[in-house]
Amino acid sequence: MRKENDILVLEFQKGNKKALAALVKTWHVVFCKKAFWLVKDSDLAKDIAQDSWQTIIDNIETLNDVKRFKSWALRIVYNKSLDVLRKQSKDRFSEIKIEKLQIATSENYKEDTELKATLLKAIQ
Image (cartoon, rainbow, N blue to C red; front, side, top):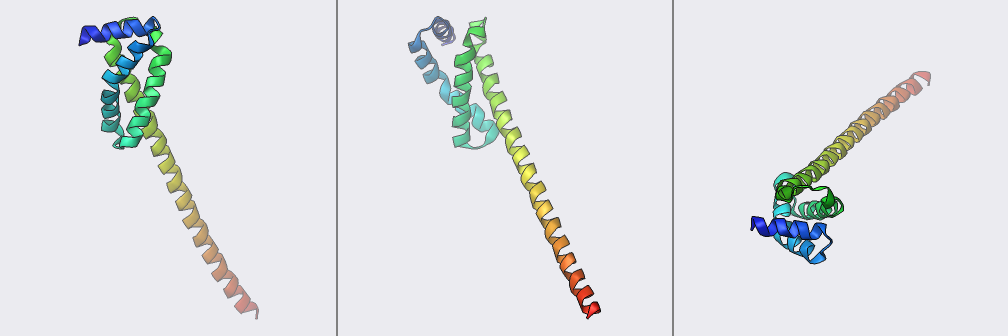
């Protein structure tokens, strides 16, 4: 298997599109499982695997040692998964900040309304 994989990577680096199809057939499920292990969302894991393939295709010519394909490709999947988790965390943090701001604003509005009512009562 390892030798076949090395040959497929070399062939794809030379431009053989059939070699890419064979690589995808061999590795796509592995990439999906790796991404799922990190993000715990199967649809998101599939998107990450797909995005990883695009990066692999765009950069495979930079891979000098074909024996390192597995670790190189899995590192891409891992990094893309972490990027998604970071974005989700940032989005959640922003949502929490907005909720706190909305609560603070509504409390201030309530206090202002009560103050206005008290002042209006005193003026009358």
